[in-house]
Image (cartoon, rainbow, N blue to C red; front, top):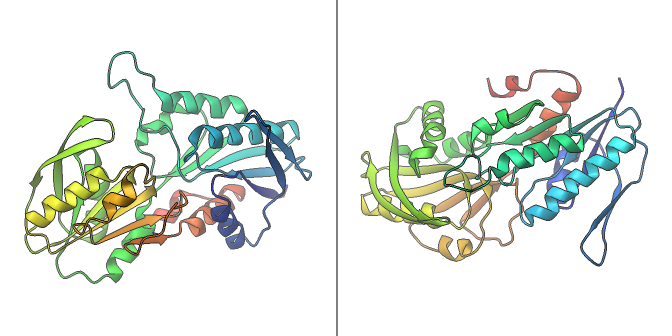
Length: 309
């Protein structure tokens, strides 16, 4: 076979190292520099001619820089005669702007999809897209993995007496229902009204949580306003404990300050985005083994869906 190489941008190099370790493969070398005016310069330091190449790069903060790094790395690899280029994007930035929710606004998720394809990427692998339909914005294969693969075992290990899954809003019901089905427990819904971006107001709980160990599940936590307010209301409604699970710990602005609130007992996240601060109540589970296995399967033309069945 042609052989494959794994490169990384600067978004989350430690995650890339973990993936490479599980593949028993060294990360390939690329020199990424920045000119004094902020322009990004890339030079691939080894031959990739005829190789299948995988670029590991989340487009987390600073999103614009990390996205440009991905595109420039792709262009450099394409011009170096790589056979195929797969973008491993544990966190797909700009996914929240996936439709025209108001007049005269962009659909930025589609714009980013166009840029990725134009740069020359042949395939995208990500996990827990904010909206599954974003896969349809691409004309290339997109593998959207499920974060539940790592959270389910951890939740079971907690041995909760009366566990129940909760969706922090109406939009997350399908995700919460999937968790509830896999764990064999019931679910409730937090009814939320959002007045402005990054601000939310929790109204009420649809379902009974009295005496229950509640597990809130979401794809991402940004400023943590929703998740903390939901935890407060759940505790007021009689919940014994409240744990939150999210795949992407964006945790921007006042997030860490809000997480100090005692209403939320534990936050379980994955390592798709590097944490800027450590907290005792934040537990990090790695999805690096999952992505390593996906890279192996993509290279060998094996089923990716087989991981989840």
